[in-house]
Amino acid sequence: MSMVELPERLVGVPIHMVGIKGTGMCALAELLSAQGALIRGSDTAEQFYTDAILKELHIPVQEGFSAQNLLPDTKLVIHSAAYDPGSHVELLRAREMGIPIVKYTDALGAYSRRFDSSAVAGVHGKTTTTALVGTILKELNLPAQVLAGSGVSNFNDRSTLILGNTFFVAETCEYRRHFLAFSPRRILLTSVESDHQDYYPTYESIRDAFIEYAQRLPQGGLLIYCYDDAGARDVADRIGTLRPDLQRIPYGKTAEGPFGVTSVRQGEECTLFSLRGMEGEFSISVPGFHTVLNATGAIALVSSLLATFDGKADGFTEIFPELWTTSRLEALRRGLASFRGSRRRSERIGEVQGILIMDDYAHHPTAIKTTLAGLRAFYPRRRLIVSFMSHTYSRTASLLDEFAASFYDADMVLLHAIYPSARETYTGGVTGKTLFERAASLYPAVYYFDDPLEALPFLQRTLQKGDLFITMGAGDNWKLGRALYEALQSQEETGER
Image (tube, rainbow, N blue to C red; front, side, top):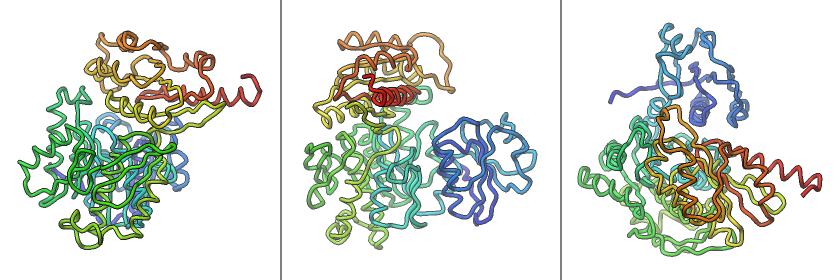
């Protein structure tokens, strides 16, 4: 694979970014700007949460695409994967001007080669795990940069955290093998199972992509993996045969070694857990055992970074007493206890009239099940009402029965039309109503509203004090949760309810 490289010295280099409002693009813009590059960009006029971030960073953004947006002094153009260099007006103009053009994932890969880089990968949990790594590193004040796939509360609602230039930790994406552009010294693997069926038609095809990624680790590199996850364990076992030089560190409830979870108990809107290799309990206030696993993986990765920082990278699992000093353990506990999650990951929209409204990105049956089970344990006295919008026809068709069976812990389910993807065309067959019919045969309270906002009057009539309403999925039904919150606020102010 040929490697794209960024200019060796970024200070003062004018870089134009096409699609700069995207979460990843905005985050990369912030990182490059911190290295001294002169960033500017373009995007649609639609408002995103990143608009405020770019404004705070004083990065100029042209709304609307035009060949005129490419200034004569531009030295590099970075573009979102959503835009085709063969047809996009600004990218065609950049080619005419002889300006190098780099896709976002390749630019991120080039950036990773400038630091001691670690990757967080997996079908589920990578955003939360990356956010946890950054939150812990912030408390430890380690010289690192972190890039997560969503805004993180503990990063001041940004996707990036900049503490120094020694380490770089990034969430990396498996879709279309985008993560192969990244150059990690360590990979934290959370989970592997069938997903992105439009690109990976079988479990074996997606598993092999993760194996290919792990083989990019350097001699003696580190693979930290969730032993509780069958797919992650499968990848680790196979890479152990292909690359016996790699260090493999398991974590989880069934894992041996220092990162084995030895106890988990539910506190008052918090979860307490213990690890075999560390003293005392840790507390985290984001629901679900999957969050405990994500936190454990984050602790394992941070342990490796600490050992490297201390000059004791080899055999770091054997030096815990000197690695995790009393002050570092206190910082770790503070970081975990302070963690409030990330945007669209068990995100609290607010509580009004005694009704708690949340939003979550879970768009795969496994993620739905684990998230709902976590919420049920975390809020045992609340009635749990779920709005779910499936994303992509291929995923819904391939996992139809699994989707239908994933709402066991919900008291009521609202389903909607499938949210389409630009990467596929509907050819008939499975629809949102197909999933509704399948789910309705399993549960007593399942309702269908083609457009999520059509459910608003129903929810206003049906929800009661003490309920928890959550929107789930990678579609746009998150708008329903926001609309509900605003409607209930308005009712409360006028005394209508």
